[in-house]
Length: 342
Image 1 (cartoon, one colour):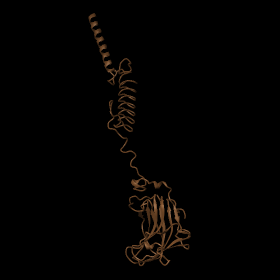
Image 2 (tube, one colour):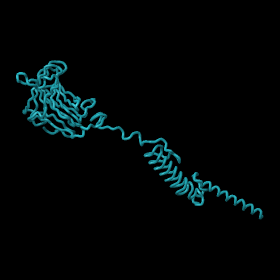
Image 3 (spheres, helix red, strand yellow):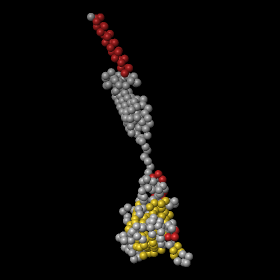
Image 4 (cartoon, one colour):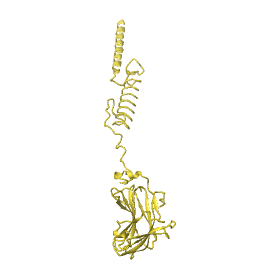
């Protein structure tokens, strides 16, 4: 019996010795997780100070390697873990939003972060303003757009307000000139205070007597400037063919507005209206931002140097001297239909 008890005692001692050996190997810092099944046992690595255990453990909770927050390969703040981690989630290296490369939780304990990300497909998108090529090259606004936007109306009550017949009319002889005999030639310009455009108090108008006599002639009633900001503005003018111009129902003249932009006097034109003496007053209009379907390169509505009211003969037919009244030429912004006064 004593022999049997001695053998049993020796066997139990060997088992306890074996358990202690296992606990030391589980406490190896390069291992993670496990604690001899006793996570609350502070005597073995893998428990209070072991992997899968509590704070400051390896492979355990906060502060651990492969554990929770603050760990390596764990959650937030970890390497290969969550937010703020290396190879983790948002804010991490190798993580998601704000990270350098990789997806959430990627990278593992020794993650390098995967491919370096830049935070998106592009930074800020394409730079542009004001629509296609409006305001300057590449869709960017020109320096001229920094000046105050221009509004004005010419009512021709007593003065011409800077309007004159351009020497660029076709032919140039349509512009007023002093004849050899001392008389005036070309277009005659007068202020007529007995009439005016519709919906206004008739305080005056510009009366033009234009000596048309052939097809493809164009009289330009122009106002010049050093560059006015008409971004977003609409320019309108009232026109009334009182007599002449057309010699029949087929040979019809027309009128439209022209803008010339920048020091290069880049030309754009608004829609034309056929002139009919029986129609009375008709309104011409042009949108400074979108005067025509395709804008020429360099056109800038913030730098308008010339406005023209163009009156033209047709491409064929017979034409005669015309009396054309022009009134209330207005540059106005949305919501303002008066534009100011002269």
